[in-house]
Amino acid sequence: MTGLAIDDAAWASAWRVRSPADKLLLSLGLVVCALVLPAWPGSVLVGLTAVLLALGPARVPARTFGRAVRLPLAFILVGAATAVVEVGGDGIGWAPDAAARAGGLVGHALAGSAAVLLLATTTPLSDLLPALQRLRVPAAVVEVASVTYRLLFVLLTSLTTIREAQAARMGYASVRGSYRSAGALTAAVLTRSWDRARRLQDGLAGRGMDVGLRVLPEARPSSRRFVAATVAGLAVLVTVGVTAG
Image 1 (cartoon, rainbow, N blue to C red):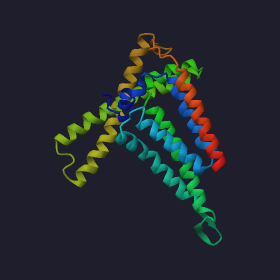
Image 2 (cartoon, rainbow, N blue to C red):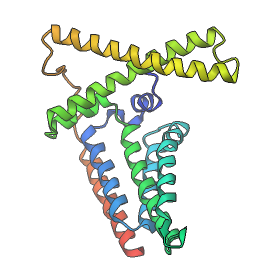
Image 3 (tube, rainbow, N blue to C red):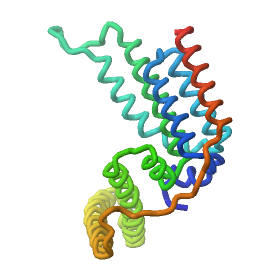
Image 4 (cartoon, rainbow, N blue to C red):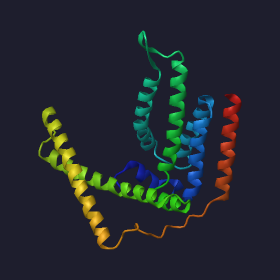
């Protein structure tokens, strides 16, 4: 267990053994469909497809997938609320096509988020980064993603350790104490994580690791059946979305 629910779900997923390139094709195809197809019924079908694939064949826990959707959903709802408000000479009011605009924005964004989460909950980043390198993604982009991924666990470890120490000292026994402890926790986590990241960088530089950490990825051959099913499924989604829309 890594401590991150999405990462744990990716390692335990039934699609863990599948080629990352195959899953990239599926998820990116669903994202494109979510963006270009009409919100009804195209985005709805894309979102349902992503959720059903995650909870069904990929065996991602429904609770983990649902919790992962909550954060992007909050941003989507805030964006939808601001998109339907219109400021004019008479003050603030609703846009003429507020309902259609809000529905389209929420539909496209939720479907795209579900497609991205399908990839995130079935593919560990340690599998995805080598696949991105093989797809000729710039090395700098891959390296930044790798460093960010490692620092997440530095932050998580620091957060857990400090919060447990505060709780043991009754730091959250009252509302006022909780605010004080939360502020101290934020400051301590940032400073400790910065220090650990700097020491990690110095250690790697001292070992001559100035071109990234090279590892031998596990070979996961592509499945022709999976690719064919993906292409056929995306074609069906496009056809139904365009025809019914």
